[in-house]
Length: 434
Image 1 (cartoon, rainbow, N blue to C red):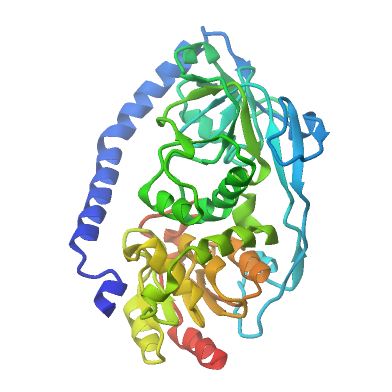
Image 2 (cartoon, rainbow, N blue to C red):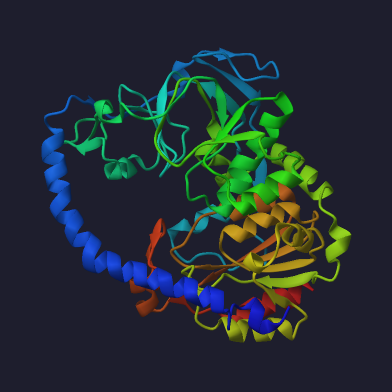
């Protein structure tokens, strides 16, 4: 793979994609936002005259715990498939930790990946945009995607109105009468989707082990339409077409949803050692010998237009290339190639991002150097590398005053945010790793 291809230069298709994104943002700012500002107050006023219920977060503990018997739990019960584990996280001597208070996520400590539960609550509406599940009485199921963390996302749903926030409430009111025409699914299904716009890392770490479990116990599974890359992953897991029921991206009423506690993001944030079984199964089904020409030492770069861009990416790529570390853009590779790339890896230098989840295919003891800008703390990758037994070196990059002002919130980063990497420090870490 040439350096031009690896760093994303000269790609006509990618250039058109970035141009469309820029045009969409400009259109939204110029047209959609003003219209929304006029329409939203009118919608909120009209919803006052439609019966509704306050939105509150439910408790999974309200369901009695029953023994796991190799199948989905019965209605209004939950079961523990496997218990919690303990993983030791160690700050590598070559790491450069964050200079601010969030650096404690990377120092020596122990994390406790929770076990996996299956929960079978009563009827819930399933919303396509965020993957949230909301009961007819206004209860958010806590283990639907983003449930306990971002109930504010329901403010974008037409059947939810804003109210004066009370003690312990969300300040939202649900109007189920507006969903009378929602398609209804009567039979029990294991939910194996988070949202209609899935993140690669979340899908690989949260959903794929759950699909593996669903396959093993013969559970009917339910998802939004699968993307081609998702089908590629599932095919290597032995889950073929038709094994998962795919429904349109619209709100559905599910009479018997079965949800895992790890569907809400726990699998990505604190990976459980049990997940290794799933990724070993995938790796065993990939013909690695077909792609043996891929490098063993590589620099994993983010695609253009993804935000958090490195201003001096070319300089870093050039310096690493002199050390035999080849720049690779994973989105230009097939899934089989990505698995092979990581399965044969000796050294991975990676910009922080979802593609780093592919380290699940690395051999034990592989070396990983991760580049993260200050203000983008999210220790999932540190936890993951510790669980996998990888040698993980974190390299936090200081920001200039201008870069600090442009970065935005970690959960809503500015698309224009870019930062400068300390090429000398990163290369020094690579040299010392050998």
